[in-house]
Amino acid sequence: MIIINEILENKKPKIEQKSVCEECVRKNKMCLLLLGKPCLGAITLAGCSAPCPKSGFMCDGCRGPKQKINLNAMKKALKIKAKLTDQEIEMILERFGKCNELKKANT
Amino acid sequence: MKLRIDHIAKIEGHASFTADIVDGDVRAAKIKIEEGARLFEGIMQGRKDEEIAEIGSRICGVCPVAHVFAGFKAIESAYKMEITEPALSLRKLMALGQLINSHALHLFFFSLSDFFGFKSDLELVNAYPEKTHDAVKIRDIGNRLVEVIGGRSIHPLTPCIGGIRKAPDASELKQLLNDCQNNLELTIKLGELFIGLKYPDFHRQTTFVSLYNPNEYAIYDGQIKVDKVVMKPENFISLLKEVQKGNDVAKRTSFAGKSYMVGALARINNHGEQLNPQARELLEKSELKLLASPNGGPCYNPFYNIMCQAIELVHCFEEAIKILNKLVNREIIISEPEIKNTSGTGIGIIEAPRGILFYGVEIKDRIVKGVEIISPTCQNLANLEADLEEFEKVEEFDKLSVEERKDKIKMLIRAYDPCVTCAVH
View 1 (cartoon, rainbow over the protein chains, first blue to last red):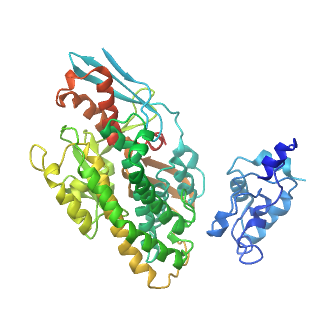
View 2 (cartoon, rainbow over the protein chains, first blue to last red; view 1 turned 180 degrees about the vertical axis):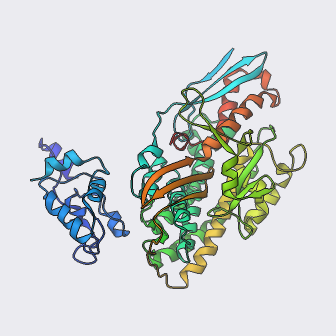
View 3 (cartoon, rainbow over the protein chains, first blue to last red; view 1 turned 135 degrees about the horizontal axis):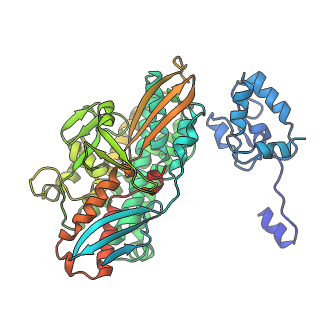
């Protein structure tokens, strides 16, 4: 609806930049990452209403990264909270082929 | 003369058909897959174990649940894990939901218009608006079974290695039970519609392969039954041969050198007596037709695959009601099991809507070393082509015009319910 209105007003529609965490039912409680599971919700573009974390499944970033993310902080969180090795982190991040996208979005 | 169908509509995926007609006989019938190789088995190599099921489910949008479970079952057999209740019941429910969803789609929207001679489904929908509504309703229940338990109606999220991640909402399960009970009558009516249809008279002897479980109508688990012989999955696989001819992207499978059939017809021929009461009643009503095959034994008419799917639909509803009745009256407590072994080889088999689906895996330290997938359509393709070559023996086939011949051939291909996307995994 918002997009249609914007097109009618001759504006270029923009994708709202928020992360999956903001739509997640686990927000503020039972966060998967805090429970030690490698969830990428924090750096992933929202819009899916977070069905995966709702079912206890880690967000694997299928919608691509949102703009201006702190990739190093994410990697650090995965390392400390989910106790993953560098190689395992790379395997998770490359899953949706977004290594280059991630570098672009990293600030 | 060459017979050629460039695009076979109303099957899952893209395929075409070519054959030579020599003196009225169909020769060299060939289904050509019009899709590129997708190399899923290669993609999975070097990935983590649970990704077998996640990536594998993307092979097919119609039967993702079957791929997920076959993948997890293979991993579980490699790790020597046993699934406990209630996770097992929940998984069975999802497999039933998958069958309901896929059968309802194929029965009503893919096959039915062939029998009435409608050229497009829109004509069918206009002619029978109420029946269409019923079919959509039945399909929706199958979808909801998967959605409530799996978290999403396609590519379910909750299954994990050794069980299920999250218990479904109790009130939603109750709602599902109600819906299943209320719509059982509708499903039986749909079944009666398919029993009343006139199927083409065509027989060709073949081998039927399905899962077999002495305690129940096997869908989720069991051993392999080849006609009357029950054998272990490992033994069956050792006798299987996959052949790739030329630049074909889908492999053809043969068992002990012969083509065989999997799917609803194979299941009902092999263990139809295990169906639930109402489904068995339907089967008995159609008994004359099923026993009309030349030697009075199993039914060798592939067109009856369609009717068998309608009977299975009723069975699935009854089975779902049975399982749901057990689940709604108690609290469902679920915990993720611990993984002790991290290496091994295993085989996972499940009855997908179109037949048995194999996953063979080799895992080392939770990293996948090799995957082997044999999908139902790969197994059926060789049999389907053999059937098509014999097809001219159908009554008065040589008197039909080319267009009518094409229609009949398309009808036979659709009766098999091929899933091309699974075949080119």
